[in-house]
Image (cartoon, rainbow, N blue to C red; front, side):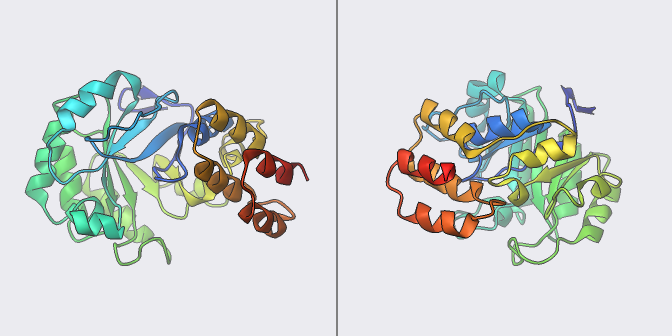
Length: 279
């Protein structure tokens, strides 16, 4: 299975999510069988250290091409490819005019696509939301030699609620020769059915605290637990706040999840968190 020049083990991708997708979580998803991981949104002016041991698709956000060529040059050898975010519906994206709120500015989008494509030979992807300009942007991506489109077929107003517009996703698919990576409410119950219409799927919220979803979908024997995350988090010297956030997520599916979350609220050390999971 291939996406541009990437050889993939399967079509199940970890969707780009800002808070969940730290390096420890991405590595565990890959270990569980994830075909391709994505980072959360990253600014080309970011000064933070970026861990890329999983060779992910690195997702960029911006409202101009400024800084993009230099940033791609810095990290290109460490990643599998690049994704440009035109899907984030957050208040911050609205304030700064990036993410889904940039979809109105086709000329600026084209300049950004050109800056990305001229800076790398690796796959370039654009992440879209359903909008009046989505099909036009898909055609722009095709024109600028991008390699795929990831579509979350909800509008800005929908946010992450309600049902994604599957018919719109099929309509977008017909409008372009580029492969569509389908995103939105994908889980282990519907992923295989969606793959009858689209070559790849992105799994977001269903994967939070649950890397094992990739094992179930890919037929891999894997049983990842919070202790596996904790080991990697310590290795990478994560802040306690991030570890606690992930601990909350990892209670999903536990029989005593409600009690565990109540106990975790009061936890002040990693040792306390570990004890709660051992119980």
